[in-house]
Length: 194
Image 1 (cartoon, one colour):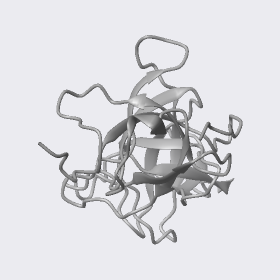
Image 2 (cartoon, one colour):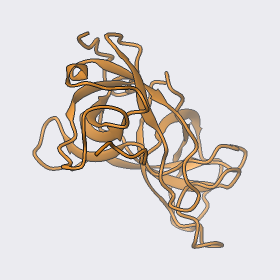
Image 3 (cartoon, helix red, strand yellow):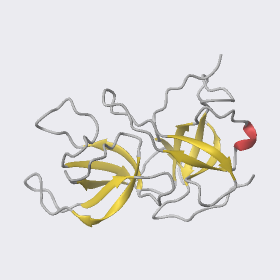
Image 4 (cartoon, helix red, strand yellow):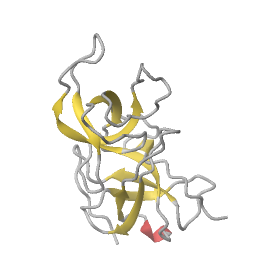
């Protein structure tokens, strides 16, 4: 049975330093002038400034973040959003809306991520791959980011560590991999094998 195309972005599953996931989660602010939605599982970059205001009493100023492009050095992956109290049905960072997001900033986090329609093989383990940034689902709040274009190139977004052990995962198109972010603001770009 072939894999289905059901992208979910980057899902943390562990770290290089531990048997279980215990990522470093930090809170970031995304201002209303940012017109791009951020979904759970999207890569995130630093926006180079900080919150000009405190949205909720008792909150500290938070650094700004934005969705990461395919070749960006990223802070990490969005793993949650602070509720939008005016609309509790929103389960992602809504475009053009001031909100806080939670980002796993650990450069050693291992993520599960789906590949695109490329016919992937076991030989892709150890290679680099490019992140394809696609808008997620406003219904589920999940990312639709996938990986593609496997090769040995330190400018690519991820390093493929292995194949996701999900029993429904098969070699080929839409295959799920275990990866680490290769272009991380707190890490180093690694050239994979080809």
